[in-house]
Amino acid sequence: MRKQTKNKVSAGDITACLRMHLTEQRPVTLHNTFQGVPVKTEADVAMVHDDFLGLIVHPYQAVCIKDARYTFIESKSLPEMIRAYPVSIDYTNHVVMLKELKVPHSITVDLHHSWVAPEKAIDVEIYSKTGISKSGEMLGIAVLEDNRVRVVMAVPEDFPHIRKDSLSLAFNLDAKGDPISVQGEVHSLVKLRNKPQKRLEVDGRAVMTDEVSILAYIARREDQIMTALDKAYKKLRKGKGMGKR
Image 1 (cartoon, rainbow, N blue to C red):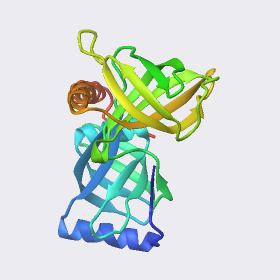
Image 2 (image 1 turned 120 degrees about the vertical axis):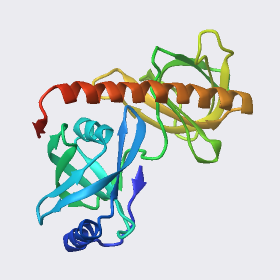
Image 3 (image 1 turned 135 degrees about the vertical axis):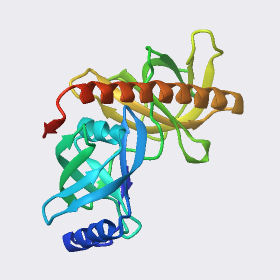
């Protein structure tokens, strides 16, 4: 989660900035994610109204906005990203109408790193310093700044650890590949809604060969997810041109 700064950006500031983009024909940048993969493209400002904003967007961004029901707008003329919600999406002409343009208090999705879920179930063996072994099901994996590896798992409700506890993880990303090891600590542990499980997130490091394997796996999943995004757009394109929200 990324907190926004305390710089105050008024509705008038946002409108004036977007009108400048329209007048000067300068694009803004849109940020979304699709199945955990960041999607960042430029969009042309087509209309600015006190209550609505019209943008001509990349087809993939239109799908992301439909899926997430929001988008983040970035401009070098504003100190923070703006969040907006779609009113309508025209998949034929790639026009999105947005409303409620505001600076959010925080951004709870990672717009810069891919957090990919496994295509097939991956079991993770979890070891502590006391030698206690538990297992979990991988929900996602990411590589962040400074080569930090994040692994997210579903674990039993009685998982016997708390935040900052040291753990070792072992798992196979490929049935034919070598086991991968991550040494780290509990970053977060929260209850999964409507499930008798908890969501465990471990922050750690892997040796270089394992890190390369993880990065290669994430790259393969990114390719698969972008293919799915392309298919989702084509499916929407064949349907109704205008989808009101």
